[in-house]
Amino acid sequence: MDKLPPEILIHILEFTVVAHYGNKNGLLRLRTTCKLFDEILKPFALRTLQLEFTRLDRTEKRLRPPSESALRRIGPLCQALYLDMMVVRDEGEVRFLGDMFAQVPTMNAFVSNLRHRYCLNEASFTEIDYRYQLGVMLEYAPNVTAVKLNLPFQLVSPGQYRAATMILGNSFAALAQRPEESETLKTLVLENLSDMSVVSLWRNPQDVKNIMTAFSDLRHLFMSVRRNEEGQTHTINFRDRLWNMIGKAEKLESLCLVDLDADEKHYWDIKTSTRRDSTLEDWQFRCVPTIRNPPKSILPNLACLELRQVEVMGCGLLTTIKCFSNSLRELYLDGVYLKTVYNADSPHDATNTLWIGLPNVRPHPRCRWIAVYLRQLKAQLRVCRVANLGYDQYVMGEAPLENNVTYDLVDPSGLSRSLEQRFVEVATGIKQPPAQDGSPIAYLPEEESQEPWALANRERPSNMRIDDWHASYYLSAQRNTTSAWQKSIDGQFPNCNQFTLNALHNFADNAYNGMTLLNRMSDSEMAHTHGAM
Image 1 (cartoon, rainbow, N blue to C red):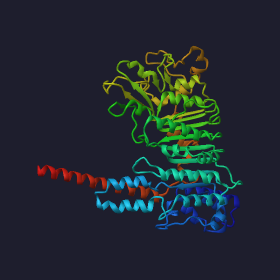
Image 2: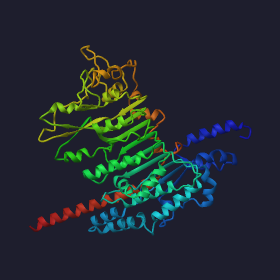
Image 3: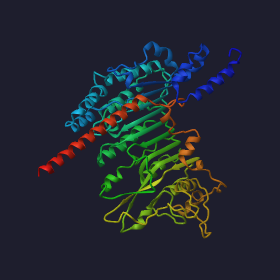
């Protein structure tokens, strides 16, 4: 090895780093091989520092946070922080579980363990302990430009999110109060962000100031959002506050929004709701918050937008796209449902909101045809990729659930192309093949004067590959500009905490067992009552 030129050895070790993706501990062990290995591998192995529950927990003391002397040595090499607080429980959640399992003595130990070890308290750790340790890490790691924060993931939602709000607020405070010589934050990932936390922080001027400071130079933002409070007033308040928060990142270049309340396992072309499932108002307000009446200055540099696993109103989606139309260059939609209302008294109105539009038909002003609208806007998209698009249909009145509305799901050319492929083709101006009878197919803009730029002007490729239109395939093969940081905040190693996964599974299993015992007790009581009668 001593005879190898340094540049060749460096290349070998760089390939070794790639080969150890997912095995950071193995790479750390390689550092002990020799001094040269240590010098070359140290910047890779120490690129991300982690702060998670076990490093703060006083109960078991399994791990300790890095000492100040260690941080002084390794801190300058750190470029990212991974903050995992998913296992922290909320007092309201534990109180709810305690009340629910009060008649099941075998669940007492489980509830007590949640309360004393996993809630923020003196026995485990407090929000002050968290704030102090995060502040110390940021003080000794001035080159941190990326942060991933996993907020508490609650089993039940009793309406209280004090723990998550405290952790979020203290995280922003620590980021805002970094030493002046520190690098500014460029990338931020917020997992399990609750609507109540956003609304609560926005009531405190100091929290707002901290957010503004932390977001001042932000370029990439990923948010997975969970909503728990219902009602029109709260929903509007959350929408406005969420976009107020995002809007503070005036230099933002990429944004990804994920709705954790949506069903990520099953996708249908059309899913149907009626007033038996929810009111029309509640159904409408389940959509992801989109911009309404945006200021002209919001996010002037946003080039990449991804919406994943969300439900959207046509008007909200169009307003958001229009807001970013001057700068937007990449659009990714995955698992997005377009909300539409079906009324048996006016069935033709069901086609007012469509992903693509109807061929050879000029839309009237009330139509919201997304792909056609992108052409009308002169959107300068260099990349448009979609997957798992569908319709969320609300059936009004006593209309039958089964109706003949097919929207634009059928390929008018008879080639059986998917809705997703045709959406990308129309949105990016690719000329459409003729109908089965040989007649031409075109998607017309609302006004004839828009035709010079809105009509398709690109010849069809001889062979379209799946990654030419499918979001998941494309993002797995290309450089992901919107959501790669969710899996790896430093782009080097995946962010995975096995303790967190095991703990959450344990919580869920215990809660399930408790519910099973409750059901058995209920069945036994019913049987006893019937027997006595």
